Image (cartoon, rainbow, N blue to C red):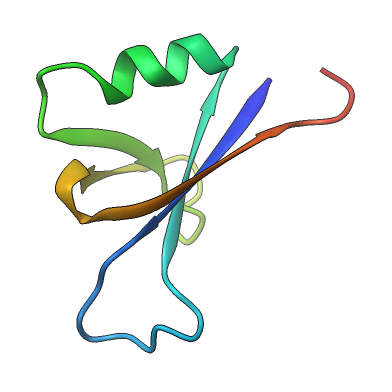
Amino acid sequence: MIKVTLYYEDNTLDYSNPPSKDVFVKNEEEFWEKYNSSNEYIKCEDELEGAYSVYLKKDKIMEIWVEKIIGD
C-alpha cells in the first residue's frame, strides 16, 4: 500500500506547518491515474473524521510526497 501526502494552500493557516491530506492507494500508478483524471478534485482521507472522505481541489496542491507503507 502507498500513502500519498498532499500539502495544500490554505490562506488561513500558518505556512511554517502547511496543511495536508492523505490518499491511500495500492500502488503509485493508481494515485497518478486519479490525480491526472479530468476531475478537478481528488478524494482524500480525513484523519479527524475517521472513515469519512474529503475532496481537495487539485489546484490548491503545493507538494506531493509518496511513501510506501511498511508491511505491504
